[in-house]
Amino acid sequence: MLGKGKLKQPIISLVIITGVLMLALGFGFTVGILSNDPDGLERALIDAHGGGEEGEAWIEDLLSPWNPPLGNISNDYLAGIIGIISSFMIMIAIFRGVSVLKKKKKLDIPQKKEI
Amino acid sequence: MHIPDGLLEPITTLILWGVSITVIIYSFSKIGKFFEKEDSEKLVPYIGVLGAVLFAFQFVNFPVPGGTSGHLIGGTLVAVILGPWVSVVVLFLVLIVQSLFGDGGITALGANAFNMGIICGIVGFYIVKTTIMIFNKTKLSKQIKVTQSTAIGAYIAIILAAAICGIEIGISGNIPLSFAVPAMVYWHLLIGIGEALISALIVYYIYRAKPDLITTEQMLGVE
Image 1 (tube, one colour):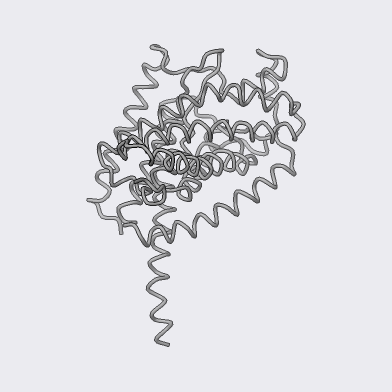
Image 2: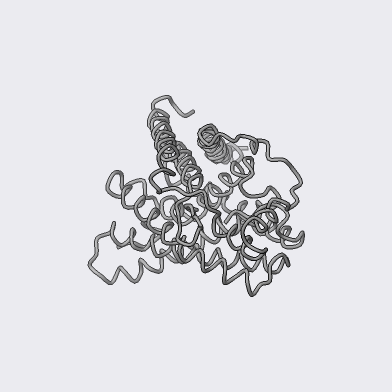
């Protein structure tokens, strides 16, 4: 198992990442290091469909088979915190799973040989 | 570069899902072998932090001249730190979390994983490796070789991914191919500068602070 000691540093890192993101969101738009403008793909799509609001409306009208479960969170700070923690937890779960499975498989091999 | 739902036609979507899933499964088998060599107990929390860093960086957009913005993708960055196979899986998982927020479609997840995980991760890694082979002929220090190569690899990989994304959209018929590819490449020529700078700075910082966390030196052939 991952001990408390091994998780201490990553958790401190996580708090720092969240803090930096919150600061970036708080001041980033004011000082101009962040932007709300469309990204490269959105810009290409907007330009290809008349530009401006017409192009943005075209993107909005694209059909999706689902409503993203967290898509209603309009607060950037909350979305950032949820996203950071979810990403961390999912990574740990998946890669920890791979590590455990690998060790289990390794331990199983000699037993099979004995039989 | 997150493709939303409804932009790609079903055949393109299915093909890209197929390719991405195949590469992800193969990546898991390679990660298993990687964990045999490296201390996975130490690496797992570190990968978790990298995933969180990627989410945070992809969450904020930096301004690009011409009323556009860009954000870090990080495929090449993770590949340089932990190898191309870890990069593919990390990017796929980050994209899943982002799709829950509506950033990138759920049906387009295969395409996004292909563009950002496979192209930026695997192709970007081998561009970095090739660049390092060239820099090996110089007397530059290890950290400068890897940092510079990361910047070059990240820049070329993001432009390549943008071109491929343009082709996917073009063949889906929503935008003419003759418009989609040049438009995507043009904007990412600018956005790529940010990607290259951020990736290189992070790699440089890790080299200064904790160089043993760069696990790919041998794979990259750094001398």
